[in-house]
Amino acid sequence: MSSPETQESLKLYKFTKILTLKIAQIVVQSRQGKKISPAFISKSEDIHSTPSSPTYLQWFNLSIPDVPEVNVDTKRVLNGEVIEALSNVLCIEISLRTNDGDEMILEMWTVKMKQVSDMSITSLSTIYYRMGVMLKSTLSISRITPAYKMSRLQNKDSYKISHKIYGGKPDLDVLGENFKTIKVSELHMPIGTIQIEVLYRTEMAINPEPRGRVPSYGEVHNISNSDIMVKSDHFPRESPRKTHEKKKLDLNKPLTAGAFVDTVKIKELHDTLSQQLPPEPPMAWLLAEKDKMEAKMEFLSLTDALVQPGTSSECSTTTAIAQVSSKAIDVPAPKYSALMCLQAKCSEVWNDYEPTKVDAENLSQQLKKFEEAVPEFDSMVASMFSVADNTEH
Image (cartoon, rainbow, N blue to C red):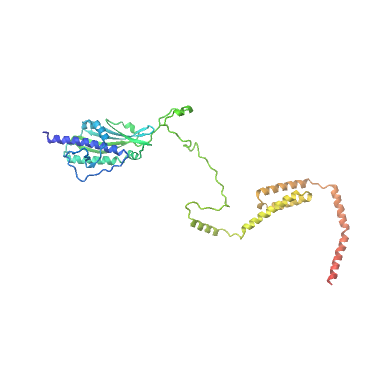
C-alpha cells in the first residue's frame, strides 16, 4: 500500500497534467473566433474524487469543453512525463495565414516547470484553488491580446488563425521587433514552480519580399498573386487628381437652398439684409430697359446713316457717333467698339475731302444772289405786318 505522501504527489502530477490540458484548450478555443461563456459552478468539487465519466468537464471550478484534437496534440507533447515535458517548455504557437499564402506568427504561449520547489505549501486544496486562479487569469488575458481581436474578424475570404503545439524553447525572432511579454501566472508547489507566459507581436504588417529590379512587360504575367499591386493614383504628388474648372456664378439666377437648411432662418436673414440696402425707385427695371432701348435705337439710326451716300450724311454720321460716344458707358462693349471703328473711318473720309475751285465759285454766286434778294425779302415782310395791322383795326 502506497504512503499518503506518494498519493499526494500522484494527485499533484494529475492536477498539473489537467491544468496543462485546460490551458491549451483555453488558448486554442479563444483563437477560433467563437465566444465562450465559462460557467462557474456554485458547489466546490471533491478533489479527492475521480470523474465518473469522460464528460465530466468542471475541473478547477470552470466549465471548459474539450476539443479532442487539442487534447491529442497536448498529450503527444507531454508523452506521459508531465514534469520532464514542462521542464523543456510546452509552447502553443498562434499564427495567421492569408489566402495568398503569407504566414505570420501572432503570439506564443509557454507553460514551463522550474525545479524550484516550495515545501511550505502542502495542502492539496490550496494548490487546487490556486490552479483555478491560474486558469481564470489565462482566460482573461487571452481576450486582451491583439490576436483575439483578429480571430474575431477572421473569415475564409481573407485569413485564418491556426495553432501549433510543440515542446522546446520557442524562436522569438519570428515575432518581429518590439514584441511584448506578459507573465500570466506562477504557482509554487512541492514538485516545482509552474509558470505561464504569453509573447505577442506588435507589428502586424506583412512586408513583401524585396525585389532587385522592376519586371519588364514580358515578365508581368509571371508575377505571383502575393505581389502587391499599387494603384496609379496611389502617390498624389506624382499623379495629382484632375482639377475641374469652377462654374461661373450667375447672379441673375434665383438662389436655391441646399439640403438640411432652415428656410425660416434664411427668410429672416433675407429680410434683414433687404432693410439695410438703400431703397430703389419704383419700376427701376423699366428705366434700365428704357436706357437699353435708346442706345439700341441710336445704334440702328447710325447704321442707316452710313448706308446713305453724300458728304452731309458723313458729317451727320460723325455727329451721331460723337453723341453716342458720350453715352458709351450705357452701350454694350461690342457695340461701343463698332461705333469707335465707324468714327475713325468717318474722320479719315472727312480729312481726305478737299473743296475744289468750282465749289468755291458756286458758293460765291449763291451768296451774291442772296444779297441782291435782301430788299425783296424786306418789302415782303413789311407788307405782311401791314396787312396784319389793318385786320386788327
